[in-house]
Length: 298
Image (tube, rainbow, N blue to C red):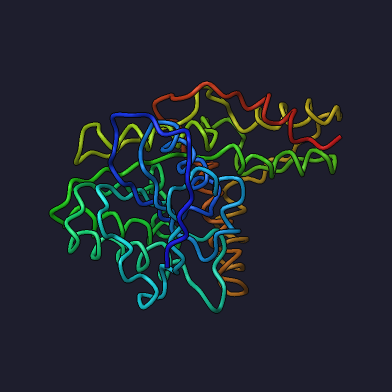
């Protein structure tokens, strides 16, 4: 099942083999690249090598398999020192659920890793999960966290608040002339770029173990300020609408729960973000305004 890829970027002195679960995802690709640049040997789990895109050149080995199909994973953990996984889905469907991937697929990796004698397991969960654990996505991730803590491996749980790429929703709304947010827009968040979060994850390979590590980007914003940045990037006149939380909680969420579990999960999570701060210790150097300027498409 391996596709071996040579690399000339190996830094001498680090010969640990690291498995990246979720390597084809937004964060996973950055993790693969950062690991290689820091001198580790990298095994990337992917359904196909092509799905790795530009990150393929940084993987020493591409293991072709699916985390939801155990029969495809034989030998996956052979020789692995550490696992870093951000396996998860952004949208639940009739065919695959948050429980199937965010919990069970990661739990399968944990069980296999423990059996194979893996030293350390690093799992990317969510910040302030206790506020929104009633949603299917966060509930599944927290089940995975509890499963990890029950293993005998060294563990680290990395808890980012929001990604830069998530903020593209604001950019898309700004292009349309109006940005919506939940609440008064004054709660605060410090989103982080995938490359900066990958650097945090890779430092955890040889850092302190058995800890939870909340992390965010270098700048703290209110949702109103993020909307302003998006309008500036698009060179559009600012127009925002705050949806009162009581409207969400009394009218919108109950209706969505009956009509669409998928949209209820998204709305419930965002409502929680509008109600509570999502700030975390600051990491990295990449700026959201610069990210918006490079992605506004105008």
